[in-house]
Length: 349
Image (tube, rainbow, N blue to C red; front, top):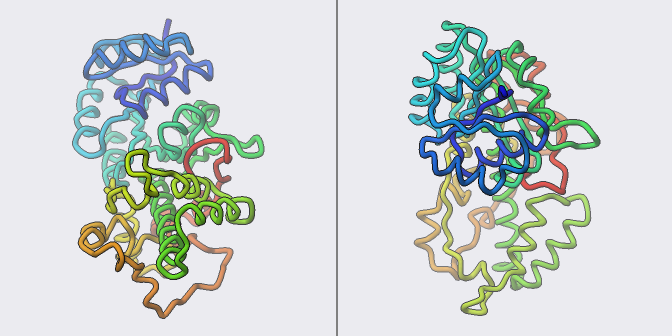
């Protein structure tokens, strides 16, 4: 039995993508640096579809039909380069390497160009929806060559989320475009999160509305034009009470947040291109000012935005279009960020 696709890197995201592929009728070859994760996946979920267990990258490659499709799901940066370095001599011209992690798009551009000289396709794929989306249907932003998408695209479209029966997957373009759009996608999401955080703070610090009452407000907002995954989970978090202390969870949880880099990269790109600002994470976002936030007494933690003056850009049908297209990409790619939103039934935004 030959596999249509191989997955190496079976942490939560990689394992869920592999399961999603198998559930949709594809035979999936599995590989992980530690074989234990492969065996755990097969023990728990082997009944969900057809899997091929492999113990080495050579076995993984040998189990694949041609053109070979190998999906890498490891930590961005050096680990991706390491896996590519091990895979490259095992593959043949026309084979496809897919990076579905949150890699910096400049790294993707470099890898795409380097592997193209050796006859290999490199596809940087943005995947949105978290671990639940990876299993039930993510929003997918694939880059790479058009030729690679002709081979890989039907798979990605089949496992993606659907909106009005249309797959939430579209070929973005070459030259790192898939990971670039995922970066901007995350940057916009973090800006949305910042607005929600500031709304919470205005209601709490300005109007004195406690979290439980705010939960009801956000729940009501979620029934109207603001209906979204982020508003929905904000209401759930505000309604949650800490079991040990009996206090609202937001008063107990540590006021700091880590980051994987995509929000910061979006800000840098906007600044370096002197782009007009519409919405992106700013220096008062939780990711960027986490150190300063934790040093401020709780009763004084009002949003910097409250100090005003407040200015809001007028709505425009071109919102975000300026940010989605580097100078050397065709204008037709601008529309790619406007692909259908994820359905409410799955995780992610």
